[in-house]
Length: 364
Ligand code: BDR
Ligand code: CA
Image (cartoon, rainbow, N blue to C red; front, side, top):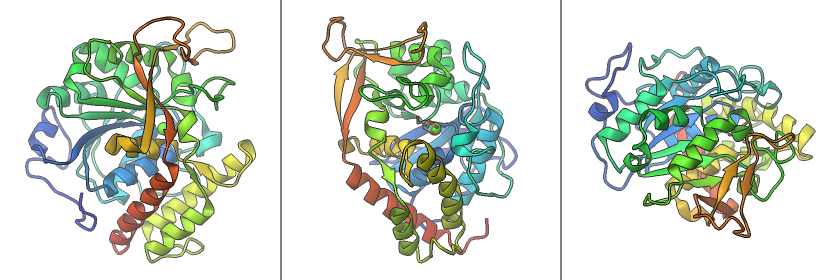
């Protein structure tokens, strides 16, 4: 979206609910833009990824699906819609899916993202409607309507995508590409010693997705950004000050709605990182994955064979990676091993600042 264009109202969209086929009606192909469906568990860094997507001219954001993870799925849907309204996109379809992992009880992480998932931030209750479609149906129907065009980006446990591919096994061929924030390939975990959060919450779903999307007969492998690269995307108070200044605001006394949101949400996230990771700042995992879905040159990836551990004593949810090719199996995942964090951080600061400036005078 061109920043400054404000909320979009698209013909044919009901203001009270969405039904099947909405995406197909709302969007014809836009040359040069990347059609995206993003699955989130909003979540502070998920909310930053949504702002980045809205702020990126080359992104054609089609819809957002909500998974349980950082907070329960209903709260994720509330946060997601409130953030999209803040960003000026109340027209987007936001859907809920299965509200618990495939085979395990749900765990959430209030210590990381706050009890409601957005740190210390307060946002007005969401007014935009929740889709009447299940997330899995939305993903399948959108992919069928635009075969080979849509990039799916998952920033959450893989529950929704697993349900979708179990219902429609042709999904990997119907989507153009899959980009996953999840796993920990050559670096320690952040939830258990070898396990990253999104895979930890629903390892069975991750196993289903990696198997289905990693089928060697498919034209492209999924791109996975694990902690190996996402922990290089470190947002510091200096980044936030620069972002606020570029938006014509002041991080110490923010006035515009987006800057106020960022300051309050990130204060919580930075305090968390200061307690658990030894620095006052924040890893912004999800925005890096979103950015890489728009510009794959931000990362360098290696084709590898990855299996998700389901029966470990201490390692359930580990993304076991065959670095030495001892299994001699065809690779099923492109694992990001390097990231251009400086380019990404500059882009993040500039784009979100432009969006914040454009939305500064708009009541939220
Ligand atoms: C992932 O876990 C969540 O807490 C973040 O939103 C991110 O998607 C990082 O491990
Ligand atoms: Ca997330």
